[in-house]
Length: 90
Image (cartoon, rainbow, N blue to C red; front, side):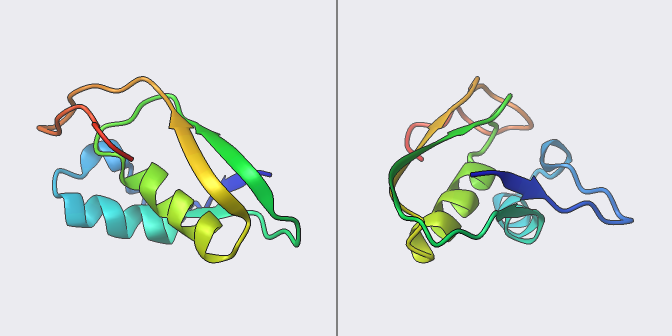
């Protein structure tokens, strides 16, 4: 399964957003998992860097809400960025 990032004329990278609500909204409007009729027991999301975890959370919610996965795990480098503490739970 692939998660696609929707690019628009106005580039809003997560790392440039300092408010968690803005990050959640941006992730929800930007990341789209491919549709599938198959249901997976587990899916692992891989990202190069996590600041707030908003992208992981929004993609995971979309996968679970459409019954594409029972469980979603994320793996990434986690660290402080723009005032966000290291992610403890995704």
